[in-house]
Length: 348
Image (cartoon, rainbow, N blue to C red):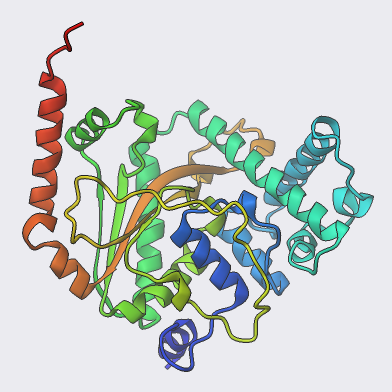
């Protein structure tokens, strides 16, 4: 009964549908391929919401090490805002109010403190990502070890989806082979391995189109922090943004600042191919893999890029027919690589 109730709570389709304002904004960010840096306000309604978002980011306010990490990020962000950007922060926002209250202030009605809280959180967000990337580069941890941790985390989430009553038809994951990475880089104008976002891929198929939005809601609540969805990497040909609805919310709340047009669909996909495809930089705690002399101020989280493909059963079946099939997709890719490698120099 509890699992069915959770699914009903998450369900967007139907006359009893209800999503919170924060749910709507997170899903819209994912579907549009936006950046949270362009947001002007959060919509977190409680301390529980703040703690949930922190947990998704690999941080626990009950852990003194994580509290120290947040305090260090806050101090760095305040220095940057004050010394580099030459912007003034109230003492309340800079260092007096408890950290857990900052996201709630950033979710309040427009005011000087609300804007300052948003500014501070955005800079902390980027600092956290930057330093985690630097730490990952310095640690003697293999990609295979990190990928295994991500796979365990995402697999647990999909187990929770099933427990919650989500009609999952198929769930699978894979690591992109070296041959596939080579093909992808030979297709790209920028031959930079860091630009291969889908080395780790997850595929989820649900029963009906109406199941897509509530499934995204649970994914964003349980595994994927909305603030680390990679901007400009979403391809959405399944979900109509206008179909999202929120009950009892401020209809004038607008997070569409800095709206980006979605990237074009993959040129090698068939014309009838439909999908929701997005990339997230997933935070992974690596406590057990850190050296004994690890500097706690650097945190205990690294990031791993992962691609997610979500669709309903009917769309998945149609995608395997004719020119949309995976075999035809690979054939078109390989043909393009052959042409690019064998192209003769132009005269003159």
